[in-house]
Image (tube, rainbow, N blue to C red; front, side, top):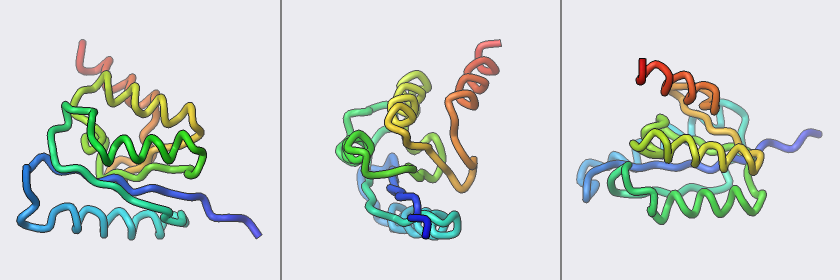
Amino acid sequence: MDAKQKAWLYCRIDAPEDTHGALKDQKEKLDGYARQMGFEVVGASEDLGSGLDFNRAGLKEAMAVAQAGELDALIVHSVSRIGRDTAKTIDFIRQLNDCGVKVYSPLEGEISMNQQAAFLSQMFR
């Protein structure tokens, strides 16, 4: 029997507080997506704050789990949940890929380095 691939859910919103339950809604949607894709959800983390700041506890936790070899996929609502700084976001995805971790989004499918490079090339034309 094949073991399910392990996924980590990562949620982020910009608001300094979550008065409308946006993080909970985001997490529930990601959990449903992960299960639909056949992943075993092994954990989740979240952050409240700017996507320009990559020094976020939830993001660091996701990377630490990836570096420990404990997951196969990071699932985010969209690539913008990782970050709003394109170069730093690409570097973060590259680091995950180096750990053997793929990034998925219910809005964007698999988020690959090639996809991000193409996005950058479109921005600077």
